[in-house]
Length: 415
Image 1 (cartoon, rainbow, N blue to C red):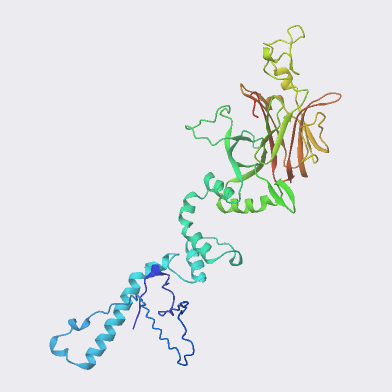
Image 2 (cartoon, rainbow, N blue to C red):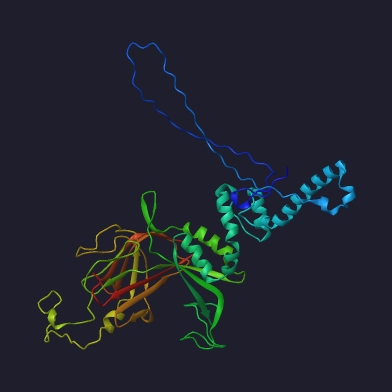
C-alpha cells in the first residue's frame, strides 16, 4: 500500500515510504497477602494487563477509476484488478505532486545534505558541518529571507555584534580630501544637504565607522580583558558577510571612563574605575564649602564668577600604561605605574558643557600595544600634574583598530 505521512509529524518527504515505530513501557507491581501458617498449598496469582495503542496512519486515497469505464466492461476481473492498482498509484502520485512544495521548506525535509542543497538555492552560507547541528542548519535557512532583508544595513551589523556580545556604534564617515575622515551619526537630508558643521565641500565617503564599546569583561586563562586582538577576527568575518561590496569598514574601540568633580571613584560597565585627583579645580564654587578641604574665601584670590575654561583647557596630555589594574585609586599618591604611550589632547577636543567636561583623543591604527590597563590626564609642566586617573582590565591594541578614548567628568555627584 502506498503511504503518505503528515509532514508536520516529523515525517520527511524525502524519506522512503516506510517507517518503523518503536516503543517501550515500564511498570512495577507489588503483591501483599497474609500467609496461612502450616499451609502447604501454593499461592497462585493471576495478573491480567490490558493496553490500548492508537496509531494514526494517513495513507494515500486511491482514485476510483472504474467509474470512467463503460458499465458493460466493469465485470472483467482483470480490468478491475488493473484499475484498482492504477487508482492507488495515481492517488499516490497526485498526493506527492500536491506535497512537492513541502520540499522547499526547511521544516519538512529530512537529511542534512538535502537541507544544505536547499539553502544553496537561495545562497545561504552555512557554518562548517563539524561546527553546526541539523537544528541550527534548519534555523539558518528559516531566517535567510528575513536576514536578506536586513543584509547590507547598519542594523544587520548591529545584530552580528550583539550575537558576539559586543555593543557597537555605527557612523557615516565624511571627508573633503579623502585623507581626513570624520565620524558622523547616520544622517538623511535633502539633496546637497550635509550634517551640521560640514559645508558643501564635504561628502559621505564609502567608509563607515564600526566602533566597539569596551563595556564587557572577558576572561582568558584567569586574566581579564576588555579586548584581545583576536576578537576582531570573527567580528570582521561576520561583517564581510553582510556589508555591501563597495562599503569599507573602519574599526575603532571606544574606552569611555566617567567620574565626577567630587573625588568619588566612579565605576562604569567593564570594571572601568575613574577619579579626579588633588590638582583638579572644581568648576562650580559654593558658599557652603567654607570649612571643607576645598574651602574658598573671598580674599584668597578666588572669584566665584570666574570661568574655569583656562584650567580645563590646560589638561592637554594623556598617558596610557600597562600597570595598576586591579589596583586602588583611593590613595593620595596615585601615579601611572608603567607608562607606554603618550600624546596630546587638542584644545578643540576638550568640550565644556553645562553638566560635564569631556576630553577626547585617538590612538591611531599604526600604534600597537598589549596590556593597556591605566590612563592618566595631565597638565604638562615640570613636573606634569596628574588630574584624572583611570584603571581597567587589559586592552590589547593592534594596527587594525583605532582606540578612541572619551573621558567624561560630570559636575554633579555620581556616587
